[in-house]
Image 1 (cartoon, rainbow, N blue to C red):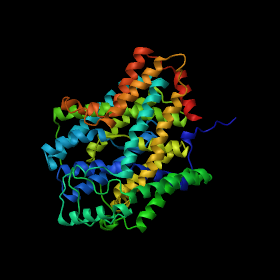
Image 2: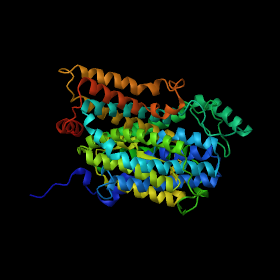
Image 3: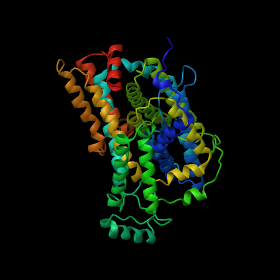
Image 4: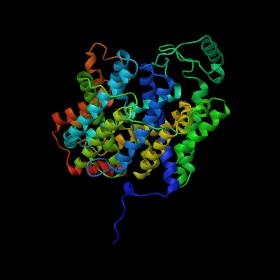
Length: 492
């Protein structure tokens, strides 16, 4: 009897691989380019250098995604459908370094700390991998639920915008003031005039587009389109419901004049990603220690992401595969430091997309990684995708991020709450800890600044609380049967 190929290892036809891979890229693109934009501007780099950071980031995103999804030797790659991107946990420390040391020297200090942290992360990955036994279904389900709830903030901000302007230093010109007044006058009609070239919103200033009915309407059209396609579409069409919804939103915003293709027209057709673009890295012990702490946070969060994917795909994560995945986080971070970019982690946005499509093949993300590499080497393609308004992604975010939360709830449905009431305490308290950064983002203002990177992640707080409470009430009881039961719950 022939051995059946597991859905995770299934190789789809090239056309389907490309289309589904592109869907993954569109979902994670906004998050992938945000960090180089923020850090590059705080470093006060020239526009050409900031553009280079973005291209380098896309290129490394693709390379590390290939390593993580396809696997390289037994030591690297979790071999699940994972898209890798820059972690936002590293933004705070990098901005602090950049603010004190602007220019190429600050970049060299950042990349030196990243290279060293990547090496340390690879060395400690097996130690973190041994923690798998502390993640029974009651812990795993709670963490995945918190991941989904936390991601919802991203999706909602894509719909309504941020209440205040961006944190990167910008100036408000008279043209900007006039445009902001026009936006305010037309907001009731749901019309959003295109932002003139050179106009920028000052940091901390009220965002005139916040909650604009036009943007909300665009997100609503995308959301309804995805739901209709998922309901009435058949086969492959239903699988790419998110991509089709995004395309519909892109066409709509293009007809409304909200897409600006000037950046794509000016971008180059080809760019070389050279290592050590800013010079020899500077290795500062204090900065290295800070970045190592960031990597510990990243690896704990990645553990939750890998467990979520393992349960969605029906392939439970083993200690060996977890160590390989976490080791790749470190390798990706090392590669990032060498090629002038930042620490990498599995992108949680794409976890939800796996749940939406129901397609579990890791080769979809391999295709996505190849697309990202091409985008990094062809800046014009990256600039074209960047012209997509975030309101278009808002409707898709509601579906994808909610799917992550729903997966957590489905896993929790297999937990014994009737016979063991202590499990209720674990879920209740850990969920509360995970909500702290969402409900009270300034809760850490009286705490030492050095520990801020460790406590500003709701996912990390929920993980620590869930693991600690489970040890207190139940002991370390994550057996292979527990993990198999959770995987079965997610698979059905």
